[in-house]
Amino acid sequence: MKLLICGDSFASDWSVKYNDYLGWTNILEQKHSVTNKAQAGCSEYRIYKQLIDENLQNYDCVILSHTSSYRIPVEQHPLLKDDILHSNADLIYSDIKDKNNPKLSGIVDFFENYFHTEYADFVHELIIKEQVTALGSTPTLHLGFYNFNLLSTLKDNFCFESIYRKNTGLINHMDQTGNKKLAKVINTWIQKL
Image (tube, rainbow, N blue to C red; front, side, top):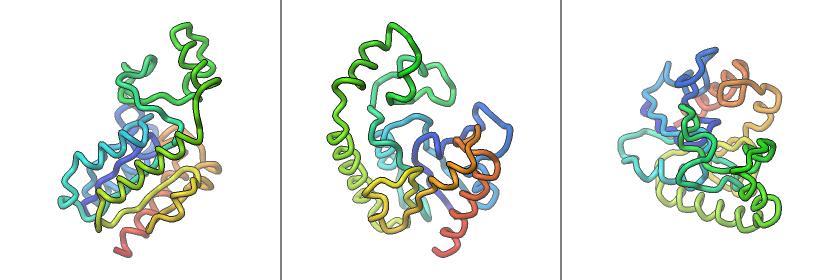
C-alpha cells in the first residue's frame, strides 16, 4: 500500500536524529511504501499544509496524526530552528515555560495571561474540518494522542493516549513497545481497506 503520513512529532521520522529503535512510521515502512510529511512540533495548520501540498491520488490511504490545539504557527521557533528534528516547530507553552530565557519572556507572558483556549480549540476544529474536506473520499485514519471532541466524530479514528501513557519513551514519544503496538493497530486498519 502507498501511505501518506501527515502530522506532528507523534508521526514524524525520528530516525533523522535517533536510531535507538524503530518508530511506528518506520515499522510501517517494512510492509508499505510510506511518504512521511510529519514534522516534530508542528501546529494543526502545518499539518493541513502537509496534506494539501500532496496529490492524494498518489496514495491508497492517509494517516493523519493530529496535534494540540494550543500549538501556534510561527515563521521560526526561537529555540528549535537549528534542531534537525524540530526545525519547523511551532510554539506551545509546554516547550518554553521553564526555559528562563529572557528572549522568551514576552511569549511566556502571552501564554500565561492572554492566550484564549476556547478560540484555539475553535480554530483547531475548523482546520480539521478543512482537512476532512481536502481528503474527500481518501481512506484516512485520524490519530490523536489525546481524545479531543472532534476526534471521535471522524469516520476512522484512534486515540492512542493509553498506548502513549503506558509506553512513554524517546521515539515518537513512546518506547519500542508503544511504537510496535501503534504500528499493529494501524496495520490492522490498513488490512481492512
